[in-house]
Length: 213
Image (tube, rainbow, N blue to C red; front, side, top):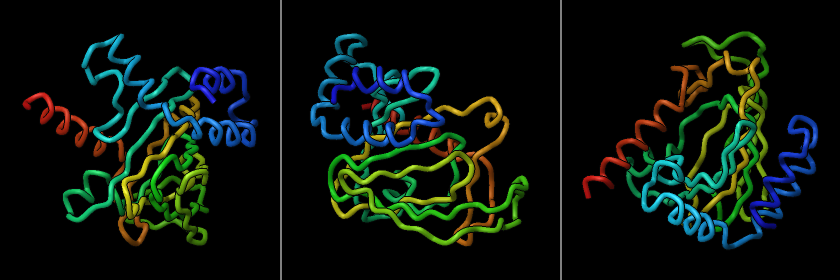
């Protein structure tokens, strides 16, 4: 499936209800092996070699963005040091404030460890919520991960080989925007809100290194 076709189909769906159709189309999009080359060609033609409009982070490309959703191609590397582990934010328990679909695109894929939050009460620093059973999913090619906003504590474990995943991020509804994503310690105790702050800091640092070079 072409990216243009995928975007058109997503725009026609009810993003809250048409979940089976979304998963099916994301799998079909992941069979397109020229997504990155086509994206880079289009971006260079439009923006030259500026990275500001095409990168989400130092390791992910934004293939499409609109007010409803984002399509992202992310790369996941094996790690041999703590610095590399932190660059890819592995082993960090966290939630997201957006709905996420991800499909394995290449490589053996990272592993996601997930536990569902069973409490409806607001999270507080130092107070562990009630949690469901631990679930593991290895995002190998064709495997799909689906997580609802603010309900799933999860962490990524590094793959054995260089891997990529294709993600669809459904932007938060107004009722969700007032709630924050959280980070948790190894025992799933809330430590601070906002993983995006850490991701942004890492991205800005990586861009500064590229610009200095």
